[in-house]
Length: 120
Image (cartoon, rainbow, N blue to C red; front, side, top):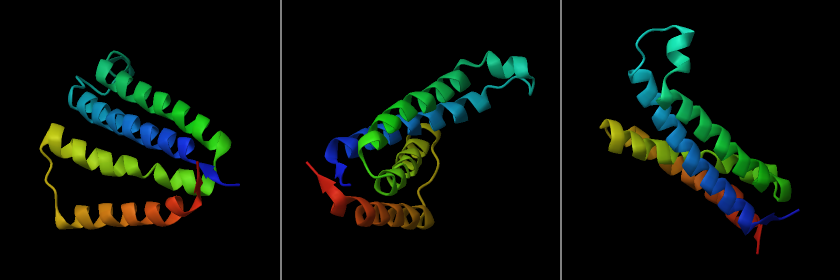
């Protein structure tokens, strides 16, 4: 089975949306007033973060229906690339040599797994 390009695009979209889920979880955790369940349930940032993860999963489910899981699932790791960028943009977290090296390895791995098995 080959993986259609549309499935790859859906996984890319899912990883992009999911990366914002992580941003809102981080933001929501900074706004917790206590560790009670009630505080967690009323935190709209946390709720939005979870909602974005669920929403991104819907795109992933549609994508894997027609593509190879062994190609598409590693592409979910692109969310790490996006999240590293958003961590810098929204939270001022530094880019380091180690982070760049790790991101480069993720991108190389995705390239090796994915691009050789697409069909249009």
